[in-house]
Image (tube, rainbow, N blue to C red):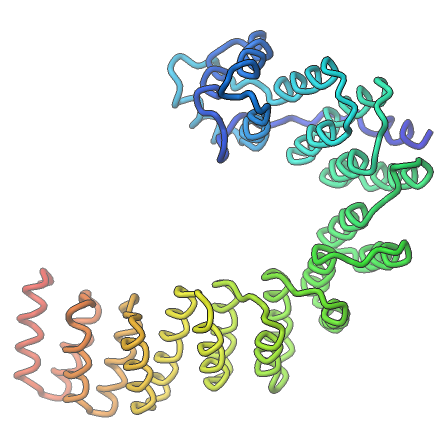
Length: 425
């Protein structure tokens, strides 16, 4: 049997990490498990399961995640939090084994909870444990389904065991109720994307389409990011365009990969076209994507595109992104010594309730005023920001150096006095 062939390849011990807390974990129960001998872990879990607090039965999942996802440094931190702990945190496999025993005892024949147990094993690349659980489910005569096979395939792929994963895929094709689905193909596409195998990930992509599945956004993410990492930008662009033609909205990772393509290709009007598609498609831009766009525009001197991006961001609720853009536009105008545009940008930002957050942004403005010898306008700027922005030592140093260079003794003395009052010698 194909499953048996995969099984023969799997028994290769892999260590699991010690416990670390994750959101949703019952800290009190975790503390008990850490402080008690391993022989008491299952009994403690039984007690918790019978309590009113954990009557819904879902408490074991965040607890297993806390134990599974830990690393040795976190384990040391965790152990230090509990009085008189054992020398080691109990293995998460005991919790998983407890859950498996409970499912079997209650004669649960729904495959999903068993699949979840194996998915936990995939998170820590514990192939041996996942295979043991799978064999137990199989031996109990529980009707297997696609989900449990996908969980096991992901475990194989997590350790790079491509042969066993492929063997399982082939086995699924011959089992009723266990046929590969889009999740199966996504797993292989993702695995080969990470491995940098362009031919293999495209082969699985084509196989998914031939099987009648519309590729998911996760599949496109793996393909596009994989091609970008391999610098196969034309292929990445082709896949991106196919995704758009299917009406699939790109996620933030795909958009960042697309921007990486644009920054490498350096083609005219690409940023403008990208922003138009963002606007027309109502795509969502996160802070990282806005920051990346802003850096590309600054590097290329595309200020009109930055203004367009600001207008787009202001329609949403991206306050931090809006702040980034205001500062970026002001820096651009300041470095280009476009004082009128710079002052308009400053007034627009402050009128919108956005303030300066970074001393470097203020300093580049000061330097621009000095280059143009616009000292009165510099005074007006400093007076306007004085109530909400505290100058630091480097900013004072720039002012002192500028006033001294142009023999502005009255301003120099006033600035030195302010500097001393601020605590700077």
